[in-house]
Length: 244
Image (cartoon, rainbow, N blue to C red; front, side):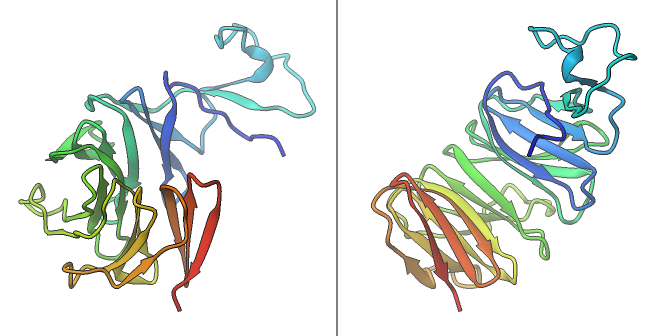
């Protein structure tokens, strides 16, 4: 299997990507503090592998290019958003507006962007670096993970969106990842450097519903699919838990 398209434009490691529900746009965030928006439907700004020199610069001529396996190698971003001051580590398309995305950064900020305006709509300032975000597809609520071990809930659509709606206290280390339950709009899971995952109900933030253990090192990522929750850890293992 070979890549259909390769996007070049970031200057440091790419930390997060997300595709809109129409599969027409892709957003990427990187350690260069940039967010880039890419067109998945149009290849007018694309050159092929043989048309790139050693410095990844497009050569002048490509009309005679013939290959059995053309690889689209260079894609120019539609929009670049450069208002973050540190690594962009979380990106999600908004469920309530197809032209808006939400980003989370190590600069202690969550930003709501309007891609049609190519600018910032609102900004949430935290006290610690964010590590990930997730947007609830039904309610539009945003859950964040942070280096202070406390997942937090926001409503970026409200006038007081910068205010924390709820905090979920229970972890003893950095929270590396949060994911909403795709089947239940009030439940989410958090993964932590304390080697545990916790399942939460936003209607009651005082204690977690369940604690999931089994890893021997930091949990770095998690995913939720139907009745299963998966986690990846620095102990080199992936564990899958049943929630049914």
